[in-house]
Length: 248
Image (tube, rainbow, N blue to C red; front, side):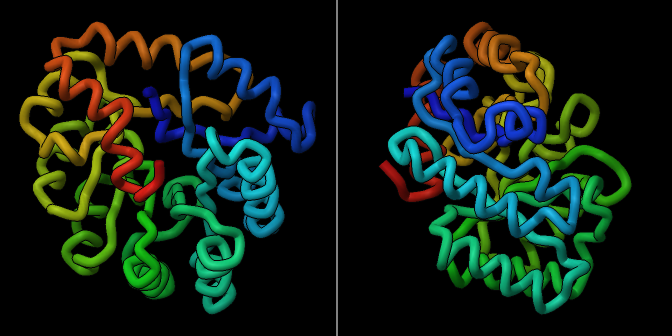
């Protein structure tokens, strides 16, 4: 079982294929990816497209529920409307979590409305995924601050600090409500993260879908060739993500 915990329904795919994921899924098939967490692209790029893109992602995932797990988003700048949209994603659309890109969306993790959303996700038992590793709004340490403020909410570092902040990701991963996703660090960093981080809170992903390029081959080869215990690699690729979301 291989689960890609970080993919997007990219703007270019939607413009070309509408709401048909067949070509998108064909790329996953090439690499033997069984399931994927499907996240928005237009919705984190444009505030005015947030709600529509959440609807699209949910509808696409509903076509292949055995393979696609939908993740929504919201914009804290919208205040009460953002909180309502966050709730709608989980309660009405059946999405399993929310994805935020503070650097691209342009908000601070200290935003009061965002804090309310994080608290709500804890109540709804839905994890919060982040783009992390990019100053000044998307640092692992900032997510660590959220983990302390909202101990009942699960947070996922979507890039484990990328190439340059993976040590910070390892540091904040000590919090029992933080997961790290191996989607960005180089191979040696991945090996150290797998050796030192809590083994059941490590995920893997590719960021596939932002464009037509195939990012899966490179990132899959990294984790397959890295010096990681085989049993741990199996947990990272298959068991851990399903346990995070409580799905089969």
